Each structure stands twice: as structure tokens, then as C-alpha cells.
Amino acid sequence: MRKPIIIGNWKMYKTTSETIDFFKKVDHACADLKIDAGVAVPFVNLALAKQHSHNLIIAAQNCHYEDLGAFTGEISVNMLKDLKLTHVIVGHSERRQMFNETNETVNLKSKKILAKGMIPIICCGETIEQYEKNQTQQVVESQIEKALQGINLEDVKTIVIAYEPIWAIGTGKTMIAEIAQNVCAIIRAKIENLYDEAVANVVRIQYGGSVKPENIKKLLAQPDIDGALVGGASLEPKAFLLLVK
Ligand code: PGA
Image (tube, rainbow, N blue to C red; front, side):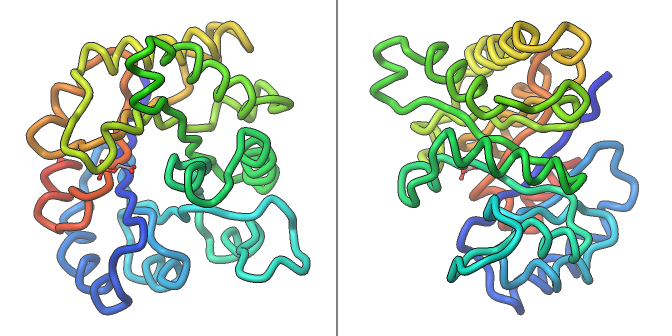
């Protein structure tokens, strides 16, 4: 059985005081969760979020793949590990579309995160044009194959994949649960093809894209959907608690 994992992606939202307020309202109520739940907060508030959270995973939204160096504005995995963080989102479509993230950097970052004993949450997903041209399978298979290149069998078992159709992100247009299931099954089959069935059976695959308290149950009821990556709906304490509970 794969343990569900629900991660809120806060993107560029919440100041320091808003972050503290969120954890005051939410953390205690998450003490008895049977799933893995957490939030990916902006870099400046990671240390503080870690301090105020006892029951939630605190994730970073990005990292650099080098250990250190002259990379103004970048954050290394060592810095994240030193904060005792465990998870890092890699390859979110907003980073691919606006900040030159490529399949190659997603691969380099994922390998670095794994080398430090942490868990990458690797995002993939098609654009609306690709979806309409029936290219979803081809796009996500290629993204997964390139992201996982050179990652060994033991490491790959620990990763989380987030399937996020780009046209569903922040638009209120959630993918129909059965169609999201089909794509997540395609991703699992691709992992089986690259590794083996035992590996494919343990890798957790999230769906993301306009997940809300009203639609999460149906999505998570699908056999190959093991959790969710949630943007907008994860910002409100009440909605977040409804999602994880
Ligand atoms: P959304 O964002 O839930 O607001 O659609 C999801 C994401 O970008 O991970």
C-alpha cells in the first residue's frame, strides 16, 4: 500500500507573519493524520516554517543542482538539508515556462536531492495544445524518462511524481478523475518499463491542477493517484485541513 501524500504549493504567497499564522491554525490539527501532508513554502520562510511545524512536511519549491558556487540568487540542496528539510519540488510547470527549467536541469536537481538523502517531487504535465493534439502520453513519458535518467533503482523508489496538466493549474478546470487516473497509470507503466514492476508499485504519483476539498476524494479514490499537489486551495487553513483530512 502506498501512503498518500498531499503537499500544498504556496508558490509566491504568504509573508512571514502569514506563515506563522497558518501553522498556528493548522499544525496541531494535523497531529493524527494517517497520510503524509505538508506545504512547500517560499525560501525565506523555510526555516521559520520548520520551526513552527511539528506534524507537517516542509518542502522547498526549487533548488540548484550544484553544491555551492557563484550562483547569485540560488539555493543549494545542502542549505535545504541543513534546515532538516526532506522534500523539494522540481520542475514545476511555472519554473519550466517562466524560469528556463528544462528536462536536463530537472534530472540534475533530482539526482542532487537524492544524493543528499532527500526526496524530489518531480512535476510533469502537458500544455493545453499538447492535450488537444492527444500528445499527453508522449509528453509525460518523455519528461519522466529524462527526469529519471541515471537514477538507480533504490533511489527511484523514494521519489514522488506530480502529474499536473498545465491547463488545469490555477484555472479551476480540474481534469476528470478517470482521465487523470489514465495518465497516472501511463506514468506508472513507464516507470515499470524503465525499472521493474516492484519499483513502479511503490513510487507515489500525485495529481495536481485545481484540486479542492470538493474534488480531492474522487481523485484520490483512483488506483494510481496517491496524493495531490495543491496550489490555491492550500493557502487557506480551513481548506487545507479539509484537504488533508
Ligand atoms: P492549483 O495549483 O491547485 O492552484 O491549480 C497547483 C500547482 O501549481 O501545483
